[in-house]
Structure formats: structure tokens, C-alpha cells
Amino acid sequence: MEMLGNRRLGITQQQAWEALNDPETLKKCIPGCDKFELTGDNQYSVALALKIGPVSAKFSGKVALSDIVAPDGYKLSFEGQGGVAGFAKGSSSVTLRPLDGAAEAASPAAGCELDYTVQAQVGGKIAQLGQRLIDGAAKSTADDFFKRFEAEMQSRYGPPPAAAAEETAEAPAEKAGVMSGLMKKMGLGKKDDKDASAAPGDAS
Image (cartoon, rainbow, N blue to C red):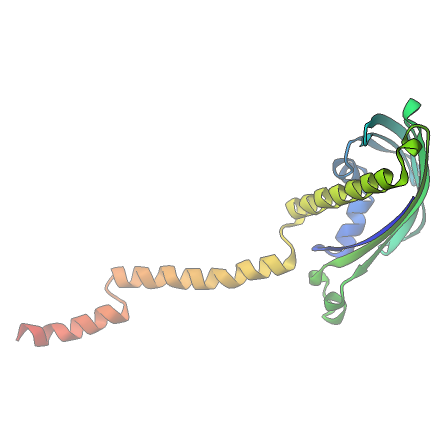
């Protein structure tokens, strides 16, 4: 099985790099993962539950990082055993780079882009399910991971820069509207000034 993808993230390259190297963050974001522990130098012990079609299994295995170039990317290899359900092993590469806007403005505010590739082999009952079902499950798992990852990053760092900028732009207008209403209530608005100047004429 081979899979590749690209994602735009509303966080800086450094923030994405730190999150992708944090076992707790990965444990939260990988669907079905209940263990992602550092066991040695760039070595991790992993346990997760997977469901592919009619086959459900708990996998335990290990992940090793290599070719680490902070904060640009790394390669990882993985292998896991799921008992009678079968096994999985393979490798993946992850690359991070700032978006063009961030590079041109010499600012990380525009976010970053993540490219990934996965090559994997499966055996046992899982392999008998057919390539289409396996590919569909892999894509669904990747999509779920990035949804969780983006939600985790927003809770940690706030909304993406574009959304934050829109909120900031709306705030002054809302504040001006509130101030205008208060001034009118206090008799300091333009309308009240006109009414006040017209009052003597009306009285005569």
C-alpha cells in the first residue's frame, strides 16, 4: 500500500515540528491509539486499536525516527502485530515548509505546509480484505488524524492567523458602534446636537 498527501496547517513550522515530535500529542491525534511512549533514542512503543472492514484488532509495535532534519522533516519506520488479524510494517516520510506568504514576509504567521508519504505492507486476515478496503481505511485514518491534529493545535495556539485577523478587523467596528450608542444615550451624539440647536427655534 502506498499513500501520499499534503496539508496546510494554520501554525508555524516550528510549532508543527514540536507537535509531531511530542508523544502525547501523537497519542491524542492517532485514531485508536492508547500508547505512544518514548523507549529510547528516537524509538517509540505504540499500541492502537484498528478496524478495517469486518476485522478489528489491537496492534502493538514500535516506531523509529531517522533522517531527522529539524524543523524540516524526518523519516519513520514502523512495525506492528495484531495477533490473528495480521501484521503491518512500513515507512513514512514527513516534510514541513513555511507557506510562500510566510517566507516572503519573513514571518511565520501565514502557517506551514506538510507533505507526507506512506509505504506499508500488511499480512494475515487484513491482507485478505482486498486493496480497495485497505486503502480506504488508511485514507480515513489519515483524515481523522489531521482533523484531530488541527483541533489540538487550535486549542493550543488559537485559530489560524487568517481567522484571527478577521476577528481583529471586526472588533474595532463593533467597538465604534457601542461607543456611538453610548454617546447618543448621553446626549453627545450628532443627532442630539441638532435637536438641541433646533430646540430654541421650536420654543419661539
